[in-house]
Image (cartoon, rainbow over all chains, first blue to last red; front, top):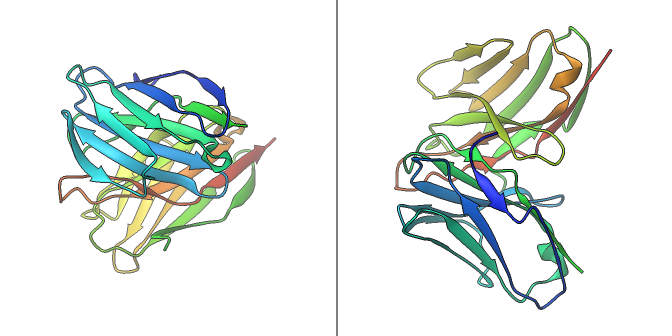
Length: 112
Length: 114
């Protein structure tokens, strides 16, 4: 158990809908990362926050947005969902902005 | 453009044998190279990591070998066990610039047979 928690574990929704994925980092970690894992794209970095501020951005779609709250938990919002958005979404956390990342168990999103 | 290339895609090793997974990177600014292990339905778990100022790092049965001039690094699993059967990902990142995104290889599915 890495200490990173993610909810929900599974999410099934329809195309065009909007969902929110939640992540709580390990105690003491200030940085949160979001990754997408799919069969065709592998593990892809989406976005990083450090102590509430955006630090780095990957190939995150404009339909996706994220934020980190004052209590350091983070949410990833996915809107106008498409079939291709079906994937595992992982959150990771680290103490600093450039230290070892520990991954949560993931949220499996299925878009029907 | 894939910046971290990983091979082989899959690997079958006999119990007690040595598993070797290779990765090559392109970006010379990378300065941190971790390996993650992932079991089905679970998140990636950090196995071992190395920085380019050393050529080898060993932790138990797991060893990373690093060749800076060739821009290659590899994971060796000694005395492979059935419990090591999982998908292994190499990754790379650069710690400067404020961000620390991990760029992952495509993964290697390891199966250790009895």
